[in-house]
Image (cartoon, rainbow, N blue to C red; front, side, top):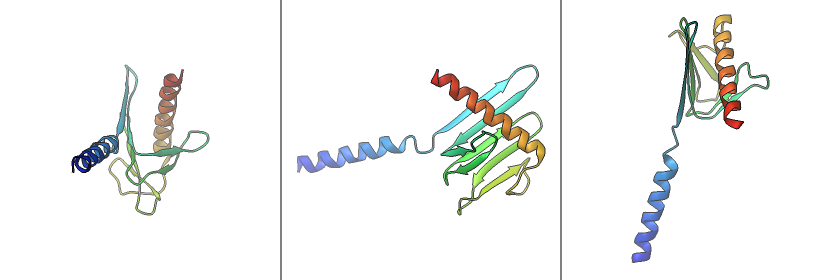
Length: 119
């Protein structure tokens, strides 16, 4: 009986520990005299080869970026299709030029931060 209880307690501890990072999110804020950029993301996000856009977001993930003028959110629908919401508008599968530039800025900042951590 003691072994059975020990196995159950161990299993519960492992389950609790592995679920702690399930919804881990990252938030970055770049702010100086000339610019403001807030980037927030969670889940698994795959960027394209030249780091100019998003190819895939896991069902539990999202990507948000905001500058002084624009607010962009990207999520995947239930079928895995990317949907973007720009400045609170209806979700759409495509981006306008200013939103593409905001996404490009955010991806470049993420790339810059990741390369700093690798060095």
